[in-house]
Amino acid sequence: MNLLKRRGFTLVELLIAIAIIGVIVTASIASFSNIRQKGRDTQRVADIKTLQKALESYYRHEGQYPATITPGQALVGSTSAITYLEMVPSNPGPQADGSCAAGGYVYSTQNNNSSYTIEFCLGETTSYLPQGSHCATPNGTYNESCSPYTMKNFENCGDTGIYMGTPYSTVQIGTQCWMDISLNFGTRINSCAAGVCDSNCNFTCYFWGTTPLNQADADNYNIQKYCSNDDPANCDEYGALYQWHTAMRFPASCDTVDCSANPTSSCCNFSLPHQGICPTGWHIPSLAEFEILENYIGMFEGGAKLKEVGTTHWESPNTGASNEFNFNGLGTGYRLAEGNVGSFFRKRTNFWTTTIMGSYGSSGTYRGLTYDATTFDLGTGAVSRKNGHSIRCLKD
Image (cartoon, rainbow, N blue to C red; front, side):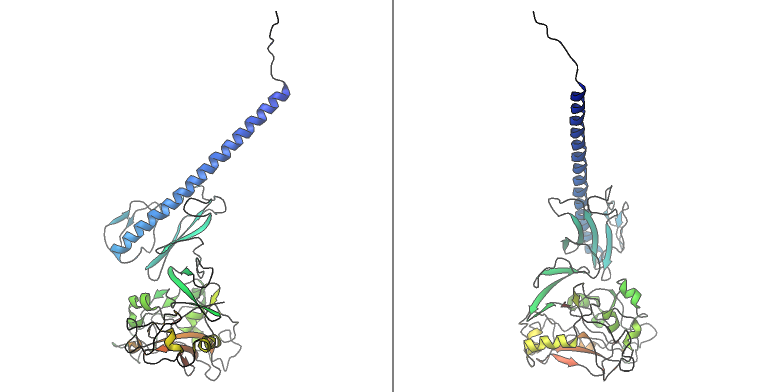
């Protein structure tokens, strides 16, 4: 009778078995790690949705978004005792997933707490959003970072993008691509400073609001804006007004530098196109670029083709308005350096240019629309750069 003999594993077989076990364990660990990362990304998406829902409820009741939110603490109303969120969520750790650096959800507000952004990052693509940086806003979530001076979700002229918490569309007019509304972001200040202006804020007022910001402030996106009749609702509906130095992101002293006498000053001698407070890839138009626009739309009837139709945002008769190119020019009004002159509201709007006229060394230039004419007006005389005008950005 043949007997079966038992024998142990050879050394080679043991090594092979150990190797196989190692591969299985490594794969299991990698799979488990990937599952945990996907779980964190799913949690991040859920956190942002929870925050957005709570913030909208907060806005409906409080009339603004909270200036700050603190992870781990409750979100309570600024003017009420309402608790909108029991605990503000924190970015789950480890936070350095995939290409994401370690860091929390970055919340900030714009336009006097009338808008917000939340920067967050996903290590992997989820069923909702792709991998990488994202910017949550009241108008939706965009697949890019919330870095200031960058317009989100924009690829081709005609697309809609988000900039400083506000959505903008773009329009092709001839060879140029324009934003279809004027800029509106920054900290609103009144056009009359207490103790400087009289009760009517008329021509005895020579200063706008607080001390103008310097270039360092502008570089840090601390932009001051003004609203027609000092009403923040007019900024939201018509766009904001900016002094020239603010629009250009220059020191306040640039508003009074005589460029005829100081042609080499950095206030006067700068390269074009000049971005100013426009998004990256966009700039404040020069006078020559506005002339290109005028030559395309027509010299005498061109202004009418740029104005919104009707009298919702213009005084009657809003002569000839057709808005043929979807430029959506509105009667924003403007402010003189001397103070609040509200009679221009709904009757006129002026757009700053980068150009300073040589014969008026301390003056700026603008192109304007008016309620009772069809022309695209040209302002090149003694135009104080302390005036407050609109900004319409042009693609580089």
